[in-house]
Amino acid sequence: MFDVFGLILPLFGLILIGFIGARVTRQPMEALGWLNTFIIYFALPALFFKLLSKTPVEQLASWDFLAANIGVTFGIFTFTFLLGFLMSRGQIAVATIQGLAGAYGNIGYMGPALAILALGEQAAIPVAIIFCFENIMHFAMAPAMMAISGQKKQTTFQLIVEVVRKISFHPFIIATAVGVVAAFMKFVPPVPIERLIDYLAQAAAPCALFAMGVTIGLRPLNRIPSALAYIVPIKLIVHPVMMYLVLSYAGDFDPIWMYSAVLLASLPTATNVFVIAQQYDVWVERASASVMLTTVVSVATVSILLFGITTGYIPADLFPK
Image (tube, rainbow, N blue to C red):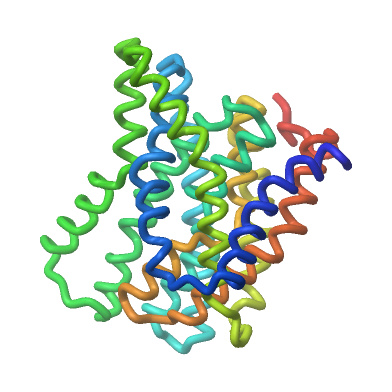
C-alpha cells in the first residue's frame, strides 16, 4: 500500500499544487499560455522522441495490440455517444462532446507521468504509440461529427484538410514519427543535443501535471450535469475494464504494454474535450465539469487500479495462452 501511495502522491500532489497555486495567486488563465506551449511543443515531444528513438523497431510494430486498443476506445466513444444522443433527444453535437468525454482520456498530460512512475521508462513506448493512434481517431471524429450535426458548415474537402492538418502538425505525433525514424536509422544525437533533450524530457511530467492542476483550479465547478451520472463511470471504470478484457482475449501482449493501455484507459477526461467544446461552442461548461469531476474521482479509481497492478491482484493477462 505504501508503494502505491508513493506513486500516487507525486502524481496527484503536483496536480494539487497547481490547483492550490491557481486559487491562491489568482493569475488569469492567459498566464498559463507559455507553460502550455513549453509542455506541448517542447517537453513532451522531447520525452517521446528520447524513448522511441532508443527502441528496437520490431517492438514498435504491434498492430494487433493497436487494433484492439483503438477498437475498445472507439467502442466506448460510440456507446457514450448513443447514450448522449438519447438523453439529449437527438442533438448530435452534444452527444459528440459526451462521447469524447467518455472515451478521450488525459493521455497526453497524465499518461506519460503515471505510466513511467508506475511501470518504468519502457512504458513510454506504448504510451506514445497509443497516444498517436487514439488522437488520430479523436481528431478525425470531432470535426466529422460536428459537420454531420450542421454545427460547422464545411465541404468534404475542407473537412479532410482540417483533419489531415490536425494530425500532421500535432507536435506529439511529429515527435513520435521522428523518434521511430531515428530508431530505424539507429541515429544518436550529439552529446550536447542529447543532454538538451534529456532536460526537456525530465521537465515534461511535473510541468504537465502542474498545468493541469492550474487549469482545474481556474474552472470552478458550479453544478454537476446529470449526464455525468453515466460519463464518469464509463470513463473511469467501464473503459479500463473493457480495455483489460479485450486485450487479454486478443493476444499474449507484453505486461508493460498491457498495463500501460489499461492505465491510459483509466485516466480522467482530457482537457482537450473542453477545448473542442469551446471551439464548437457546444456543452462548454458541462465539458469543463466532466474534466474536473473525473479528475477528482480518478484519485480513488486510479489508486485502486495501481494497487491491483503492483500487488499482482490484477494479472498482466486474464486469459494466458
